[in-house]
Length: 119
Image 1 (cartoon, helix red, strand yellow):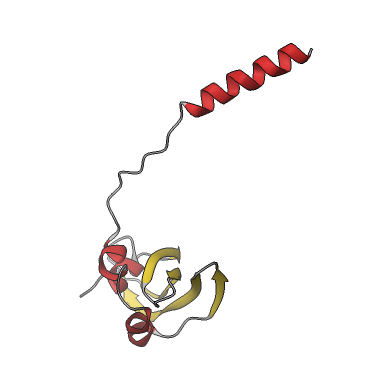
Image 2: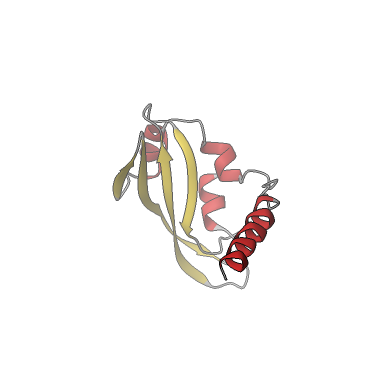
C-alpha cells in the first residue's frame, strides 16, 4: 500500500513539474495607460478610492468611479460606472489595475476601457 501511495505521489509530482503557465496576452489598454504612473494623478482625475488594504510593501485600493449615463448602440440609455482594484507600490506608483466591475460602454464592450484608457 505504501509503495502505491509513493508511486502515485511521484507520478503526480512529475506530471505537475512538466506543467508551465505562460501568459502572452498583451497588456490591456488600461494597464498601458496607467501602470507606472502616479496613483495620485489617477485618483485626482477619477475620484478617490473607497478603501485600501496593505499587502506587504504594496497597497491595494478599491476604487469605483466614472459614474455616467451612456447611450448604447441600440438607443437605450443606461447608468454606468467602473470598479477596480489598484495595486500601488511604496512610492505611490501604480503596479497593477484589475477591473472588478464593468458594463458595455457607448462604443464597445467595456465602459472601463473607454473611461480609463482615454488620453
